[in-house]
Image (cartoon, rainbow, N blue to C red):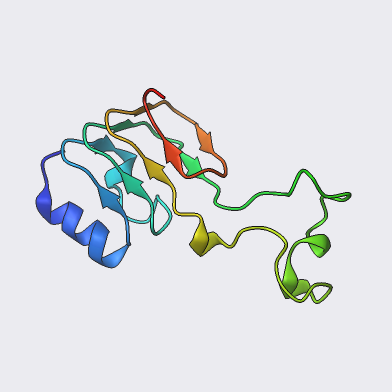
Length: 111
């Protein structure tokens, strides 16, 4: 919870920013995706999964042929790239056990 060295390692080697006094799995190297930001005073339980891409619900088909350009059917992806979806968990957020965060950019305690 207080380790500035761990936060330094997460930021510089895993591209994960964790705020002061936040604790839980957010401080375990490799468990959060790169470019995620966790605010101050957050509490993150085990089992957190963060998906930075998802099937496009507005398309006729959910098959990846219709949104993933790597498969050769499209010239460019039809959904947002992972590097463009950099989630932010705001300050003072509690994330319970076995939570899955889907597309979106900001998770706040209150909005």
